[in-house]
Image (cartoon, rainbow, N blue to C red; front, top):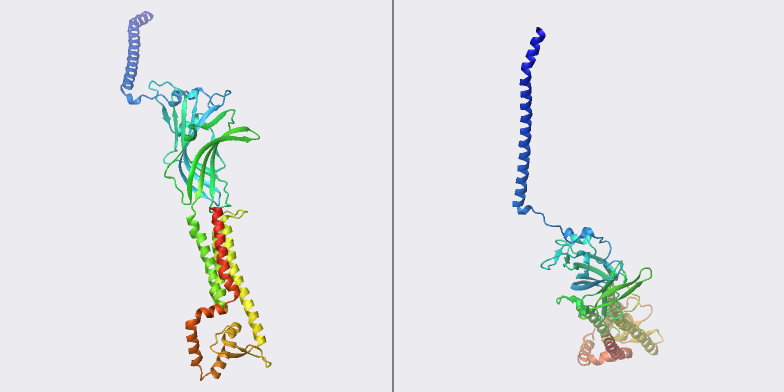
Length: 469
């Protein structure tokens, strides 16, 4: 009986359990359908919003447009075929400095390269070119042009690197950059400062010889242009010219080389004021000693020493601003010959003084007395003791004790009564006979030197300026 009742109870509950399970499964299915519909709706909404927001559309990359990733730009265009022609043109902005000591020059210029790389060609309905800055240079092939004999160089980078790359639809490329370069200039100073220097800036490919790269001037002689306002403090820029040639290296072969040639003629006026004119004045000043009394030893000696030292200072200043070359420069010729004239004027007076002393000693010996006392006039006494005497004196030559004081004392004692009379007579005679007295007291060497020294110096200047100008 109990078993029958359990079976009846289970039979009543079974339809309820089945109904509840079916309802739960239906609810879960409906919820999944709602979530799926919501996701699809949100996705369509996001796509619609993206289409409406045009600022979010990403343009095509330049690398994709130029097919950079599809080619190996480590190889030059047309690798394995004929050499690629690369045209060059240059615009010289300024010549910043010329250094004679370092034998170099500094130049700022715009360097432009032209070549064709079909790998960079692209489609363009309007046939317009694309311009890029320096960031694209590292991803494509560019010519490896360098400056021969350059000491230092740099690309300007204010406010950004001064590099421009322009690509045309057919693959033609223009690569431009602004450079300052310091390069050697082999100068010849044999005619300095009356010289003309010829300098050149040389361009060449570093890696590619003439079998791979042909370097040439894009527009011939018109490929080199300069700013009309270029000027230098010490030079006239006579001409700019472009030329080309070949350079041979034993290990790598022949290379095309381009030359930027310019001639510089030095301004002479600065050196005339600083070197030539002072040297002329010192030489002429040394001639003044020929007109000074031969017995005025301090005046003539001090004048000669002063001119010699001044000439040495001028020569030292010129040498300090010049390179230490092993040959003679034109300015050295002029300064050394001027120094020789000044030095010879000192030697001339030494000869005059020596010959004058010998001549007067001979005259004293002829008029000497047996007592050992020599009668001397005032001029002869001054030649020996360097003191000025108003009257004739007797001077004991042995043993010369304080000659100036002794002679003046002796003169004052023996001529007290007649002190004024000789002085008045001499003053009257000097007033009308100064020129005659100077001429009579001059040595014959001084007389000839007044004519010979200026004449020879004028002849030297005539030949010097005629040869170097």
